[in-house]
Length: 188
Image 1 (cartoon, rainbow, N blue to C red):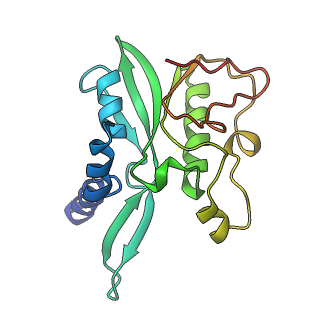
Image 2 (cartoon, rainbow, N blue to C red; image 1 turned 90 degrees about the vertical axis):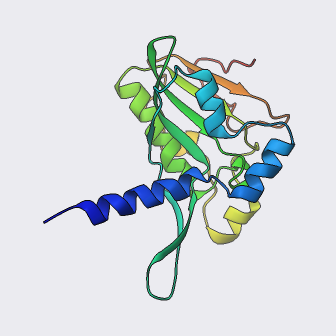
């Protein structure tokens, strides 16, 4: 028995997720002089050190035969990396997918990232390029509950690991907010 078909399917899904929000959205993003989330991560971390977690999580679209046709990845890229040789856990908003808004699947990845960093006592680096306010109108239309990832499901505070946040957006609110007892957000 071979696992090759399953491994090939995982590779296909990773390739779909690597397309971010699609060629058109990535082109529009770059036309505005912005780097994609993966380009920002690659520019910051030591070369070849980024190991992504949850790359194939997202919203799948299947055809009538039940075959995966498309995969829109979640709008948060996260994983382990090294910065100047030091291990860190890094997250970045993908502004080519739903404008980086904090919608459904993102909450679980936020909680995972913060829990992982806390458990392994790693610095948590957030590259925030998203909207502010903790949710989107589109999400509220499809879900009965608002998204406030840092309020409901986050690990115990204060976190015993250093954190830094870097953002470019003029209207960052939720991603830049730190609960009482947390290290203050840093800007650059």
